[in-house]
Image (cartoon, rainbow, N blue to C red; front, side):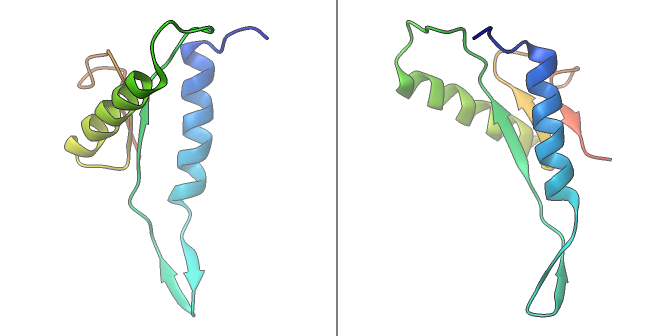
Length: 88
């Protein structure tokens, strides 16, 4: 299979974020969820160990959270620029 490009990964992350933005009902309560998504793109096959990929995704997740949450951040990008997409 062809590798996923950054634009496609961003669209997939935005679809997940759209689902998380919707309020849900639990025990009769209407709840909103705070969320953050960290992405560590990787070419296949990757010479990097899986543990390194998880560390990169975790670093991106914390970059999204540091920006106030409800955001998507890509590892290895300036997350103050287009790599960070904030929920509206």
